[in-house]
Length: 319
Length: 290
Image (tube, rainbow over the protein chains, first blue to last red):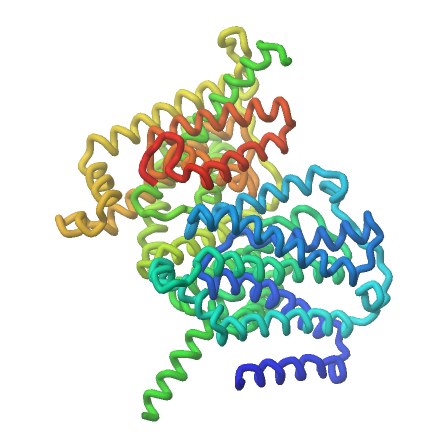
């Protein structure tokens, strides 16, 4: 329960932020950090807790984003009605990909490759079809009414993304403390042993990819509402897939707080790079790539792993 | 139905492109066969090699084909160092780590190129860029024919290296049984790095053959990387003959697919083949061990 108290304290602290902070820059920074944390939480369910490394999570992100945009623009749906549809679409794509790949026992590099290939197929399709706006993309009309899931102030968006991140937190906490979470982590650590002990490996993996897909689609839906625009490259391009896996790897895979910690560190790193090097295209992602290589080389368990060993060392010292 | 003459020209064109694909895939399959990892930085490394050829042409005015003796050793050294100093150290004995590190390297290379060279697409002009030769009545561009021949020669040299030399024997030994190879005194880390170096050297050669009719920009590798993966999977992971045949096949499929479906949807055909092969026949069409 201590874990839940920490999450609640975090939520209250963020919720109070607009009362004290009026700077649009600071609020935007917090919104973008929470958004990155949400993508990280989504990837972490499948990659961190489940050990299935996806290199194409943009597939779920883009599907959520396009469902949200297409339903509003082409079919005149209200945004609040479109959101559940977007989440369902993300989950459905997850179930379809999972059924295809896990049934054939694809894992490791093969799974990473297939997710990457599917994201690429969807990018080309979105680039081709008219109802997704083809290469031009889709623009969601500006309304700034809460009834349309748009807000005149940044605080509104902060509450929206905070709510989504809280769901991500609760999912992560549940994975740490439930029987299902234990099964999923057993599959990650040793699939054969887990199966021998009676875990239904296929079912456990399928459920994980669906949950992961729903959370990732929520990130895509938020993106559309906040920035009012989506195109095939943003939706299904490799940048989102990389962003989703970086946060948990930096923060600590398979931990509750890792994605948020990683997202915060990435944000600081991104801003520092921008201040030092200017807004040159590419430099930000280049730095992210270097961080990825360094993390895997020297801190494979992420920053949370570092804190964990400190705590363990202190506990050992006390004893 | 389409005119058979157009079909023939398209198929021949596909074959020439396919030979270069095969060369790229050979490097990938060699690395996979030995290290059991998929090199996600393969496309980015090809992009670096293409920029190398481009700048050798723009600066000292070196003809792309004369860049071969520069680019092949340069890429080999880069690959050897990359495996020895970065990838090997980061692996901690886990394949997932290698997966992430090569992805990280790809991100770094691609975005550094974007930062340094901007996203502009660059091409080079050679006296023979637009010259053509008539084969079976179809007009095929001369640099593509050179690329076809060159790719086959490099592939043959690679096969000789694997089949006939001590290094080749060591590579095959490690691919079969890593621990056993170590026990009989093979320097496994050295052979890993040699394989990675040779894999990237193939890219150096491919870049020299490609650039006269192709272009370079920071994202150019992305298009090739999935094609190369498709070929490797199609041919059977780690199978050299499979990579060669798979490359030629994919080249023709892409060319004919583009004829019927248009450029961008023609590419989808390749991805669908890729996904289908991975799902239904991961050991590859040519039956090599997965």
